[in-house]
Image (cartoon, rainbow, N blue to C red):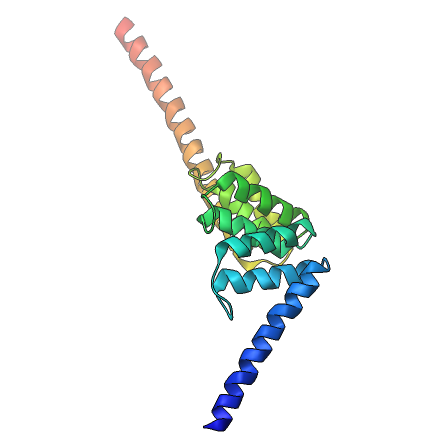
Length: 182
């Protein structure tokens, strides 16, 4: 019984020291540590869950140029966790992460441009961000790029078929006009 209690106390002590260590490193402008402490608050791992505290630390990480912090901050805005849901702000933070060559940021940005309900739909921009994400070895980005390209090909085929049918209809209409004159 004493051994179990000792293990629990040591575990709690290590968790507290990890939290304090991350906080100190974040205060010393270590962006990755700011992201890591934000993740603890975001998930409620070893601390009381607080989206508001997660947002503070993600913002600090992002301001320090830590791309994962930018992406995760974008996620808070996207899902409305600890803040009002705001796709425009999500887009800003995803774009910053993508600019820092973080593949998830690029992939999430592609998602925003692909779905009309979130921001102005722009499949060309979605393709651009999915391509960058894929080049950065993001499997989801590669998969979404393939889906987008397949959809674009299907749309092109439908457009070509429409144009062909329209020309055929125009010819038939001209024939009918000629027959009416006879």
